[in-house]
Length: 396
Ligand code: HEM
Image (tube, rainbow, N blue to C red; front, side, top):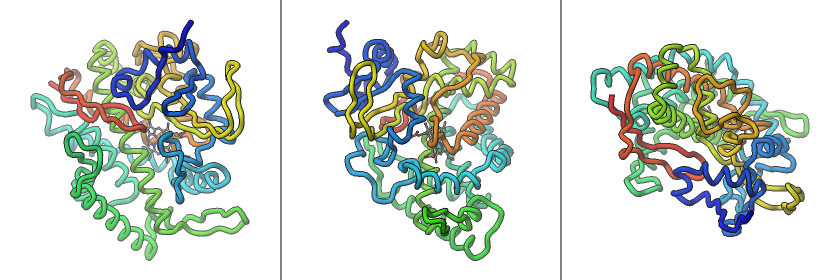
């Protein structure tokens, strides 16, 4: 068996459009793979990705988790780019405020937001499920979670729409996007200042007052820049990923109308359907790591100080773990998948992501039990962190 013609290039748009045939070949023919052009290794089997995710000492996040950014580690990294013990203190602090209970309290608000966006499309010919809905919902949800008052939501949404907007063919931020980002920064600074003066009962007030454990047994409060960095992290980690999940939800269910009909008939299946959609199309398909000691896989030595990618999306389609992995089956029994990570960096927003995925789907199916995708209007986003659609035009 030759693997000379087996190339996995994560920057190739054609591969990115459908990476699964290559992922299958990697799992079968090169479960430890080296890309000579971009100098990184790749693990593609479920068990290997899982084990590496659990071993943060060998597979470090401290140089970042995006392979092209690892050569120059960040001076002031967010929690997702930290190793213990620094990661442990930050994670402990934010986990106390980011509880399942607090996230659960958002359900009514998420439903209201869905209704506000989806109702105007009832009786219309169609809309863009991601541009008009999936990309907007998570931004509004995170603002609510942080404690932005309802009356500010429209302004925040307008700024966020500008900040997220990219000119056709451009990947960088436009001037309007930069200005909007500055306004958002100023807005949150005012709230930080106000919460420092008079704390309320919201996530931001708790974060402002929270004590970060230092290595020497002392504690201190977070600085303004650490608070902004955290807001930016949860927005970056929570908005693009949920938008991609919702885009996959609309496309996969349109292409599998039988599965969609099951969810309409038995809404109790929706939470499982969301897990299956997460498994089937991982919104964050690749996690990068830095190898801190020599390791060996299948007789091949991966040297210390190598870059390695954990191919989550491949692991989730590994036939060694899942029966008929390439079949979308909303009633499949799923004990575990890797789309929300595993180990110490397990997605902090997992319960929020699941809640948004479930409520968005419930509210969609209640209003629109079926739809068609305008396939030639689909547009993918091309980033090294998320994979999915920026535009999903629907015909109702
Ligand atoms: C469908 C939606 C989502 C997906 C697929 C997703 C996926 C992931 C994955 C795979 C990781 C692990 C990264 C790694 O191991 O390097 C992660 C971590 C993280 N996620 Fe999510 N995420 C989602 C939604 C959210 C939301 C809504 C939030 C915020 C509210 C969030 C905040 C975070 C944070 C802060 C981390 C870093 C945790 C740490 O370093 O300890 N995510 N996410």
